[in-house]
Length: 506
Ligand code: KIV
Ligand code: ZN
View 1 (cartoon, rainbow, N blue to C red):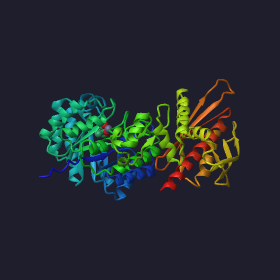
View 2: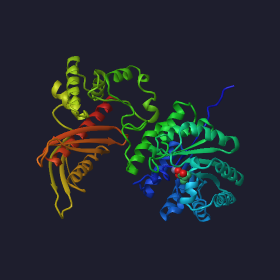
View 3: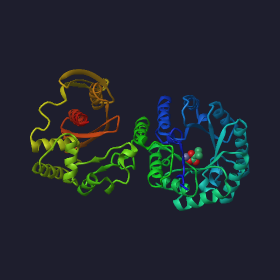
């Protein structure tokens, strides 16, 4: 008899715990866009918010419920009648109600006795169920709750009719072994689905969530890019990919949409993703060293445990000081340049020399080096060229830039304001080039190479398109505004060159 793979439910809390990330505040429109993307991605439950926390939050939860998505819509509520009534008013499919159960939180967070906590738990669950709505119950700080009391509150909640039990590792203090043991014990007396909600204070949120699943948990709470209180929650993309690839379990997640989902959440939340973050970080599928680039071009399994396409990514071979011939060759071939063996050796040597000086080798550097070795490789004309620019700033003046660019030989004029002259001019460039490509500045770094007010400034930028393709470029000048403009235009030219070349190949 064939055994079906285990199915694990994915409960997404990006819009609730994720929004509790310090510094993150999403508008109604942002939340609707994220909810629609999560629905496309295939999450089973969207925790849309905490309606009683503000009038705006109540409106958001209601609006998300009214979208009529396939995912179930959940609202968070404390164990109070007032909170539950506000959640009920949003007409959600599920109410996630919680109350502290650890000694420290009962005493200092809500000033309640264990008996009062038990009464509130039972009354709240019964109240939700009396209204015909599904209820998930969380004894908050469950993992620091005295074992006998945790047993008592979970049993009382089960008897009161909760539909699922969630065990929050509120301060992320568990390790996989203790998580496994806790969930094994819970499985012995809880007869309804059990969920796990891990925080990442020790960097163990994903490992602990998976340990809970190994012990029998049926559902995992996650947030896109691992957003959430303090160090965040278990990252959706890491949990889903590991369940698929390592455990061979089933979820409803379309893993191919993981990267685009990460980009949308990063852009709307303003929280950038660290470059070496698993699955969705810029470097997660980039290879630099010679042995790696040679290996993956011959057989991807050599250094890729996950196929990039599975999570909506593409492989990137990077030219840097550890690069091998294959990496540099592949990167140049990708943009239609085919150096001979001698030229390739010379290009590689110069790339390594730049790296040895402590410089990161940008895409534009590689092309500049190649041009120097092979002669002009892309013809004389640039796709985007600076014709003229004026920047005004001052004590009372709003920093404003007007710019004239030639794009594919046709002139365009535009102006923008900004928080400073660099911001204004870079915005003006993006406004004009936006006519041909939707690309935006994703990173800007300014370094002074020499001291003094006449220091030479080096600007390194990254630009990114809607699919997450990134191109980097640099420029060095004494004038910071000019260095910024030159780096930006270099980057845009390299991006356009690459994308047009790839378009030609298809
Ligand atoms: O981490 C936590 O304990 C929570 C609760 C609201 C479940 O997010
Ligand atoms: Zn939480």
